[in-house]
Length: 219
Image 1 (cartoon, rainbow, N blue to C red):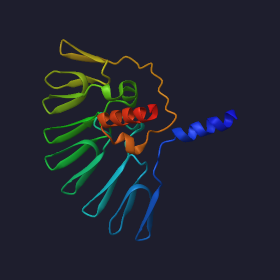
Image 2 (image 1 turned 135 degrees about the vertical axis):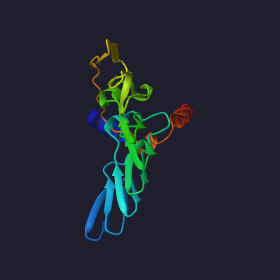
Image 3 (image 1 turned 60 degrees about the vertical axis):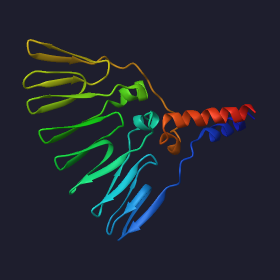
Image 4 (image 1 turned 90 degrees about the vertical axis):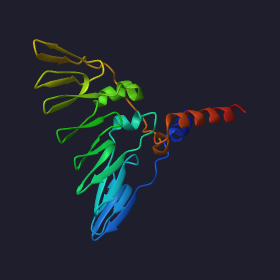
C-alpha cells in the first residue's frame, strides 16, 4: 500500500515534459525540441527548455545549463537567438555591436563591447544554485583595451581583475590587484526538473496561479 501511494505521489510530482519530436531533411534526422530545418540542415534543442532559430539557411540551437533551468529569473526563462551578417549566437542578454553578436549562457550573465571585442561572462553554476534569482548582476570594467567582468572589479592602467562570486572581494594595493572568492558550502540537489511551461512564465504569474490553485483547493 505504501509503495502504491509513493508511486502515485511521484507521478503527480513529475513535470509535464513535452514529447520529443523528429525532423528529417536531405538524409539527416534530428530529434529533440524546438526543431528547425533549412534546405539541407536539421537541428533540435536537447531539452524542452532550449530554443532553435534559423538565419541565412543555418540552424542554431541552444540549451540553458541546469542552474538556469532550476533557478529561472523573475521574468521567466526565455533564451533567444540573434544574428548580424553571417554571425549568429543563442543564449541570454544577447548583444549586437560592431557587426558581431554574442550571448551569455545564463540569464544572469552580461555581455559588453569594448574596442570591438564582445565579451560575455556568467556567474558560476554554484553561485546561481546558491542565490537563484536573487544573485546580483555582475559588472564589467575596462583598462586600456582590456575588459573583464564579474564582481567587485578593480583596475589599474593596464589590468582588470574581478571576483568570480558575489561574496568575493578584490583589493588594489600599490597597483597590484588581488581577488578572493570564499568557497560555497552549499550542496544543491534537485530530484525533478521544473515544468518547461512554468519556468517560461514571469514570477508574478507563477505566484498568482499558485494562489488561485490553493484557493480552489480550499473550497
